[in-house]
Amino acid sequence: MSNTKSLAKAASVIMVATLVGRFVGFIREMVIANQFGASVHTDAYVVAYTIPSMVAMALAGAFNAAFLPVFNDYLVSRDRGEANNLANTTINLVAVFFITLITAAFVLSPYIVKLLAPGFDRASLALTAKLFRIILPALLFIGLMGLISAILNSYRHFLFPALGPMITSLVTIGFVLALGRRWGIASLAAGTMVGFAAQFLFQLPVMWKKGFQYRLIISWSHPGVKKTLWLMLPVVLGVIIGQAPVFVERGLASTLEAGSISALNYANRVMQLPLGLFVAAISIPVFPALSVYASKREYGQLKETLIRGISLFFLILVPAAVGLLTLNKPIIKLLFEHGEFTVHNTVVTANALAYYALAIIPWALRDILTRSFYALQDTVTPVLIAAVGAMATVLFDLLLVKIMGVGGLALGLALGLSANVLLLYVYLRRKLGKIFPAHWLLTLGKIISAGAVMALVTAMLYNLLGSYVPDSSRQGLLLKILLAGAAGVLVYFFGLLLLKVREIADLTGLIIKLKDKMLKSR
Image (cartoon, rainbow, N blue to C red; front, side, top):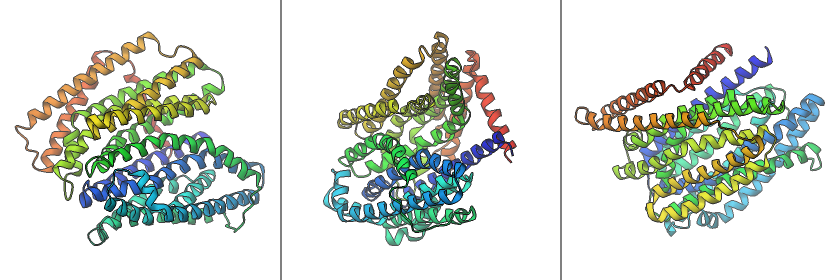
């Protein structure tokens, strides 16, 4: 198999598995909402899960960015035995580190949860500490799983690591459905912990099949370990900086009414759906091209590729943002308002979603601009800018939460991300010179205008349909959302064609390329 075809197959496997995992993960959120609603119990769970989720994000990126290239170097330039020694030493060190961390966190859990949720009362803090202790062992499996996924990727095995999140979600769903009424919210915490353990165990048979042999060795002076740790530091630091606003957001939300933290979490999950679907689709062809042009110092081509990528983001994500903004309440009602999830929960969550919708485009732009710096082999500037962006988000949160409550925290994220994007653009322009030609600003104006018309049509049609299609049934609500949303999207793309937006051809080409990659990789 050629290298190009192999890469296409890997990209297709990862993208499809990621989309499946996100879909199952969203089903998990719907099950949680049905069983527990948005309450003090779900607030406690979200806070208890904050640290494990941050560790998972940090290590997934860190091991792929740091351990994987070092391990690959040992596989290619030395014998497999040396590579196994490096892997075994790293695995054992990770295990020792997390066992120590879990033990310390277990003892200090009352103080940790008080720091994470200062607005909780004594009963809520006690519940959060209990859930935190149940979830804590998952940290060991998360750490080992991130490392094993990097090893499997080195062996060109991508399917099982990519399917891992789906395993965790399925186990969690099973625990909640089977034990939710008996154990209450503890079933969710236990399901999360066992789910991560299952995800870890799921990958072990493939490791052994690839020839890996586990040995209980620790070599503190191993040069590969030292190099891995050195490379991991900036990645982990970047994730911690990026997640700092999440800690602040949840801490501030803990001072609001019960269910506020959960409402933000549910709304954020909905916002992530279009990001997970479309950003991945654009990233696959765009990001490798940026690296190639940067390595060849073809900066004109790099800027052209960057512009095309940003244009595609606007083309696709403007209607996604408009749809979530105009149909926020019916979408939340359709997805979550059943079981223990109340009408009031819907109102609060929909309010958060409306403002989170404004964060979709800056979120995607931050991604592609950061990757542009990486392509230019500058990893320091994005981290420094991320720190400033995080501080801006925290500042906006502190100012807006007093005025707007949950909506203010969601808007704070959108404004903080926008500040991050602005700084990234300013510093990237210093490196590359002028990036956007004058005619591109005209194109952007056309896209935004088409989006505004879409918002008007979608809102008007949804309200008009209310006279004919009752939303008392889920079928009627779904029909209204689909009809109003589809009409809005059609008007949007018709407007783009009418305004002669040339980037429509790029979008069509991207769809064709992705389809061809999927077919060729089979």
